[in-house]
Structure formats: C-alpha cells, structure tokens
Image (tube, rainbow over the protein chains, first blue to last red):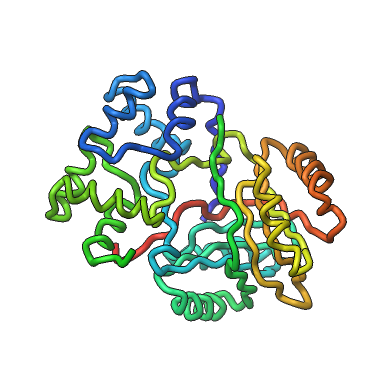
Length: 158
Length: 160
C-alpha cells in the first residue's frame, strides 16, 4: 500500500477551517444534527453537508462520525514495534495492513522502524493476532500495551 | 456499560461515518430496524460512558499542515513516571501521553508522548521547551520522527 502523500491544506478556506475547528467533537445527536450544527456555525444545513462531503472526498477529513475508546467496551489496544530491514519495510507494512485490526502504521527513524497500533475486541485477541503477524512477516514484535493514559487531546486547530 | 448486541451493531454501523443527510440517525435506525429515538438514545449512552470519546470531524492532521510528528519516549524512574506523565500532558503540543512497559534490554523507555507540529524544527523547539520547563530534560529520551504513513485510520470492529 502506498503511503498517503496528498497535501490539501492549501485549498481549505475559512468556512472549512471553521467547520473543522467547530466539529472535531460535539456533533449534535438530535433529529436534525446538521441543521443544529449549521446554526451554531452560522451556515445553511445544505452548505454544511456539502462541505463535509467535499472534505471527506479530498482527504482533509478521514471520517465524519465517532472516535471510539474500545477499552471502555472491553476491547484492547496495543502499540507494537518491529525492526525491519529497509528493503523489506514496504512489503512488511503491506502484510500488516491486511489485518482490519490495524489502526495506524508508521515508519519511524529508529532501530525499531515500523510502528503500528492494533485494536481488538478483547485483550486475549491481541496475543493471537500478534503471533499471527509475527508468523506471516517473519519479524518479532515488541508489544507495548498502554498501562496508564495521562492525556489524549488530539484536537488540531487550523 | 454492558453492551448489548444492538449496541454492537450500532457501533459497527456508524464506525466508518454518519450518513451525510439531514436525518442521519433516522437512516441508521432504518438499517438496523430501530427507531430514530432509540438510535439517538444509544449513541448518547455510548458517549456518556466514554465508549465514543469524540463525535464529529476526524481530521487527517498531515493534510492540515501538521506534517511533523514525533514520538518522544522517556526513561523515567518508576516512582516519578506518573507525575511526569501529568506534567507532559499539560502542554498543548503534546497530543498523547501514555505509560507503557519497558522491554529491557533493548527498550528502556516507559513514558510515550506524541508531539505534533508544522515542521521538524517546531517539534524540536517545543520539545526543548518542554524538557526545560518540566525538568525532565535530565532523563534519557529518544525522538522518533515519523516517516512514511502506511495507514492512518480507525480500526474496524465486528463483521463487515
């Protein structure tokens, strides 16, 4: 899988920015949520819907909906690292990305150069998933499950 | 909160995003043979129990100009790691802060922070400021900048 390389920051206008800043959390859960949100932003409902559609289409937004914390529902996340020879990193990333449980998969400049996050519906599933990935890729995984969360504030001002 | 089968179906139904129409919850309700009010009530419950931690626009930070992101990992003595984690989490540019197990001998680091910035240099400047202000500059750390992104999205749950 090719890495995403599009950079669309330059084609956002002030309305897009206002929508992104205003709607990273707190989208209404009501009968007419786009109308309610649009009113707060000073926009028409149809304009808001079209803008969101456009930003999903051009990749500014990856999704418009929920961001889950599946640990609260009994699920489990872990951060995993692998040390992979440079020549094999793309192929290895491709194998790993075939699993739907993979949420993120980044190259980083370190001896451990491939870092990915796995999310499963139970902690037990992590163990078997990682064993399977190790077998398919041929590389051992360093498993770094979260022990304590001090802060999660992924909010980006634009 | 104990999830019912209906909750699980709802979680799966909206995980890729809401329908972009004036009454998205009514559309989801129809797919799942529920009432609109039931869908609204269940989503609110998922939010109040923090299973849905955020609801709305999920951005690709790279496309917004936050093209540099570094995972900064710290080796902090066990009896100080909680205090250090709380301090680090207070900085705006620190977007994630977790304690994770060391994997000795190769991996001595137990505190993980993610720092996002608009350039490599801005991330380094921010890190220096953080290290100085918190006094954590005394501990050993490594900075792992991201290279290629092979995937950035949420994981998928359940049968599709």
